Amino acid sequence: MNENFYINEKASFKSTTNNLGEIRSFVGKILEQIDIPSDEKDNIILAVDEACTNIIKHAYKLSPDGDIILNITVRNSELAIKIVDYGLSFEPDTVPVPDIKELYRQHKVGGLGLHLIKSLMDDVKFKIIPGVRNEVSLKKKIAQKSISRI
Amino acid sequence: MTEFKVNNREVSNVNVIDLSGYLDAHTAPILEDAFARLIDQNKFNIIVNFSSLDYISSAGLGVFMAFIDKVRSNSGDIKLTSMSKKIFNIFDLLGFPLLYEIFNDDTEAIQKFNSK
Image (cartoon, rainbow over all chains, first blue to last red; front, side):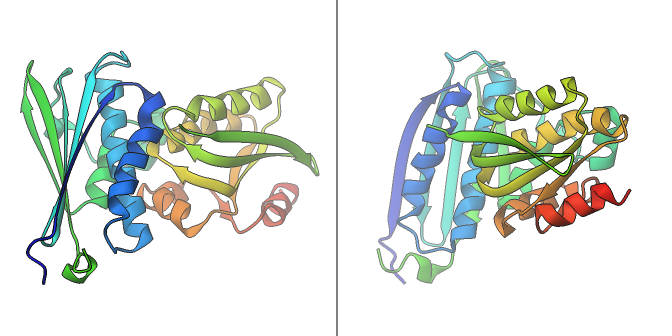
């Protein structure tokens, strides 16, 4: 076990969907340093994409001038991704688990992104300070052997 | 940067949309346009081929939800083919196989269209 293993990377992106590719690349490059299966890396990248897409669409209402701050840390056997924005807040507990047949009837697609994030990550927590900042924290356990080579 | 392309072709009276690249909230409007164009031309038997698609997020899946009712109410369907395991898993996580027929390849989907 390598107790010294530590990654702490931070980046800021403007709130436009044009930046989603760059956000995925940023996360992907950090994950290259960790020896975990590629499908797990894909899932983590997708969860971050979904979180940032929700911020762009709902917190900033597609205005491209907002800030999205990503902070990724890997310590011991945990990958943690903190995503902060300063847009409109929401009540994450009020977003229902999507029922695909019900959404079909209503011609809606709401809640799919949040449901995906919760399905793909081990732990998802929100810290909302209305009018000040929104923070979502995504965590994934990673096997100790995955990081021992660092 | 996000690269995403659609290509349209017609096979045995069925319209096939081939997807390639990255389908996310930024590129989803390109697929929306492709569906809208076919529907404007009263073409409702549609196959979407995923063999060259590298990535999809829920914004991409949402496009299928937006058009399926219109297509089915005109006696057509959107059938999905040639998904990698990675792409299928995302559809599966959200329950899409309950609503959409997913085939191994275009031939199977075309046979299903032509057998109705």
